[in-house]
Image (tube, rainbow, N blue to C red; front, side, top):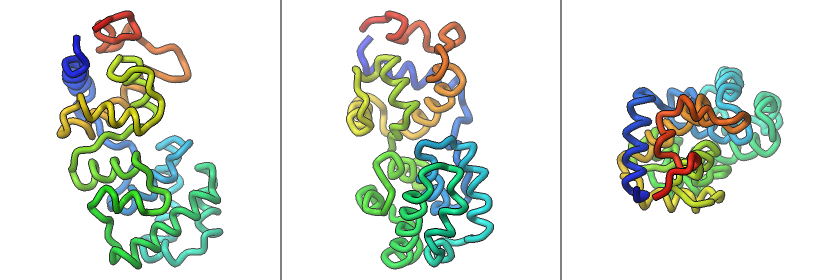
Amino acid sequence: MKKEELALEVIQRLKSEYPDAGCTLDYDQAWKLLVSVRLAAQCTDARVNVVVQDLYAKYPSIEALAEARVDDIEAIVRPCGLGKSKARDISACMKMLVEKYEGKIPRDFQALLKLPGVGRKSANLIMGDVFGEPAIVTDTHCIRLTNRIGLVDNLKEPKKVEMALWKIIPPEEGSDFCHRLVYHGRDVCTARTKPYCSRCCLSDICHKNGVEE
């Protein structure tokens, strides 16, 4: 099975398995997703969803967060780890949104990359979830699962994985596909335990089980 064919089969099976999969970070405004995805680095989405409640209670807008002292932001977000750098990035990002974009999130991928603390993963998440544009979010689940399944070949660098997936994943499927990989990676194809291959909907086509092209 060629990679393009494998990709389409994986997409369909995961779609059946997780029909309602979406972003696991809670947000009701675009800028909040931008904050949450920065806090999610080396932290669980579940913890981020708890921590941001206090952050948004104290700073309910882009403008309020832009005016906040970095130390005060850090005091709230510290449970997410890397508090100092995350607080600094969030502060600088909110300031840039106010000063350069009138408090709105730019809809351009390259513009998003210029925001402090925003890398390709975050920019793709914003493009896909906020703007409904084609996106591939190469988080740890995506990298682990696509290597195991055989969609990419021993690639660990996020950008290389992203570029390889763009070649085989239909653009309109990319964002939802990556969300489903998160669900599958947490429930079945786990990182910290042995994968539960016996109850995996991909077991008969997964290269980890010795399936060859």
